[in-house]
Amino acid sequence: MQRAIISLLLFFVLCLLSNHTIDYTMGRQIENRSPYVLAFTSIGAISLESRLDCWAKLRTDSTENEMKRYMHTLVTSLNLEYQPDHVLISSSDGTVEMEYNLTQKGVKFYLAVQSRADSKETHFVVSAETRDPDKSLVHIKQQLDRVGILEWHDYYLYKGELPENYDQASTARLAEVMMKNLEAVIIDTYQEGRSFSCTGYSKVLKDTEPIWIDGRRHNVQVALYSSPSQDKTYVYIGVPLIVGNY
Image (cartoon, rainbow, N blue to C red; front, side, top):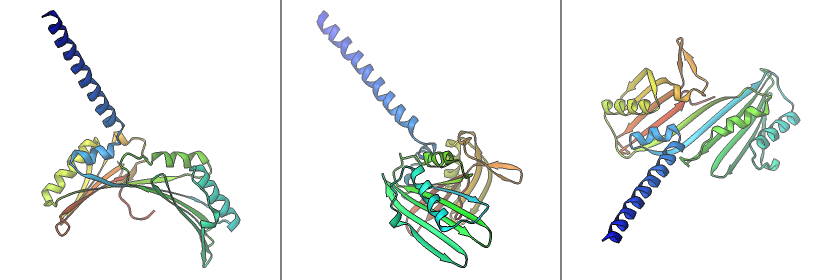
């Protein structure tokens, strides 16, 4: 009888330890996931891709040799494989542009250096895109900042989808849930047809350089577009805003 009681107690302790281990493991997984993935998860959206666009400029134009050195510096600072023969060079009306594309460890990179004789400026663009929801692109901006010769600006875009479409009121509610999970205060909203967008400020994203609009800080934007023809709703998070060109 005593042996049976001891066995039951041992079984009970093992169950407690197992549950604690499972809870701890799941907690660590949730803790390590980005707030953007968690925002998608909060409404049941599937993460499709993440994109980072960085841009900077020098207030002087550059020679082709200087541009080649700049390109080499950008590539090596990001610990990427550099193949000079794969750099595309084009020129037109005083503008010279160099472009370099490669994919490394599941991330697509696009790097460009452009010299404009008319404005006496040299522009730099670094873009990175991945479909892995657990892969962070934040370190790319940090690596560029360490170079120290340029002041980089960055924009992030996160895209996801829901496997059904929604009406106007529902897309607005979904956006509100996402902003709540990003701990963002909604500042402005815009709705047209089945598209809904809202901008706000989140203390969780305090490391992001905010955009000032009408004297108010914005560092996050959420947008949803519901497509009846595809029976899907596309979800976007932009930090600090959703923009098309840089």
